[in-house]
Image (tube, rainbow, N blue to C red; front, side, top):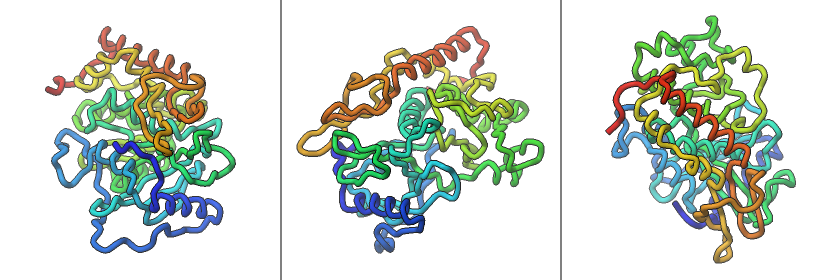
Length: 368
């Protein structure tokens, strides 16, 4: 993981293009044509029972994080999302000289509202690393960068430390939305309607007979439950067909964010509704201690050193523990608030208790 968060030429062009797009509402090229010889085609994430870090046709979450944090990251293009109200953009990126082209959803911290907070993506990604093996991850790799020399969007999001927070989430370009999977018969459509906003991802009958589906849905349900996602409707999910694997691609309504009352009429994965977890996942949950959860209160820290904001390891909360973004002087930190840590730890203990009392079962043997 690079320590410097100085914003290079390509990244400055990226933000400039993003800001121009936000103002003008028209597509804008940030760099121009693809440089000659650059590999094309984003890789899928290495997920599923046969995934291996040695495979050349997929990327591990760690390798995606490294690319998103690379100081030489350059932008090729910026486009607006076709749906959604969070003012996100999709950035086409590459790491010279030999990195493949890939995309990331980008949101500035200035996009925070009372109903969604983009910092949650980075915090959920950190949480899933505690309870899921990398090949089981259900949230796209997400990073937060502290970028200097970037103009403010709406007069918000610019920290006293002198940088702007931007959140980058890997774009799963080879995945399919639920409506397409329902239309093609991969998933059952609620009441025969592929566009139904009810996610209805847990199918008890298929859970019994399909091992790949069972593992994917159990791990997904666990994460959505632990983060207390308040609006996990159908458009928040995409999936790979082979191997079957479901992802939550928008976790901004997580932890303490208000719950959408429409979820009362839908299958709400924020409740733990699967009857069992994979044995290796269950072992990870059992092993969680309060200190692990408290570590999410200081998940990402930046310090000013050598004239630049640099990523730093920090084992304690700095600034106001009742805020997710803390900026006391020359330091900047992102983490769960005190009340969010308490609520998360309570949900973890609830899952541990259910496993201990065997009201929540386990599937198969634990991984070696």
